[in-house]
Image (cartoon, rainbow, N blue to C red; front, top):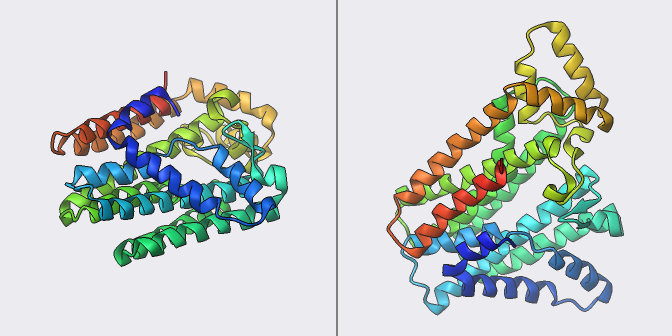
Length: 333
């Protein structure tokens, strides 16, 4: 975890430790040594823990008191949402045939696709256990809708591979379902547990969804333009699978002739990693990067406006800093 993230998590540091403890306790409640080994592998790569942090930030930003009983429920929901995220990543790695994540071997690489698929479902089941113990039917309903949306987004993306009919609105809808909904759920859950008004809940939902969109736009851009060290995985995986992501959609839009478009489509269709450098050069010469940054900037500005309108608390400062963190992560240069 970066120094910046540790700093902005300070107002919720104790709660985040408890969330981590819950995840570890429930994943290590396992008699089989072989399954425990896989669980420990999942735990060894903790990631940024953004989603549970957003549950807690949203809870306190909307007047959550932090009394013992409420806080246990909040932390269980935060842990459950992180486990859903972890499960979705394991399944993503299977779908994408990814060898690495966070500079470590993926479960599918180390134990095979069959184990990885079941491990993802295992994490969903642990998440359901935590949600059931939290005992909030409204959040259970929202989580059910969110997991369904995650699957819809993934299916739409897979079924749309290697087709040049994808539009920017369709691409953004896939992103909303694949990434935006889980960020949205995190913020929504915190507000609901704080008993926030509907209007305030809807605003913080939008805050989360916006950041989720920027997060994924950045990942898609870096898959083409980034390096293994920055990404924590091998670049070009989306390109290799035939994904038509935002920079490529903008690049295709700029084609001024049928011949130019056909040539570009031929390079993309080849899925030849040796052509990636040529695509990078084309993107650098085009307006694809400025347009990608501009779209991400719209979402970031909206989230920043929402954060700035919150009551003045240490949590508000952290939410403002969180927008800045995601902006720097998205486009560091």
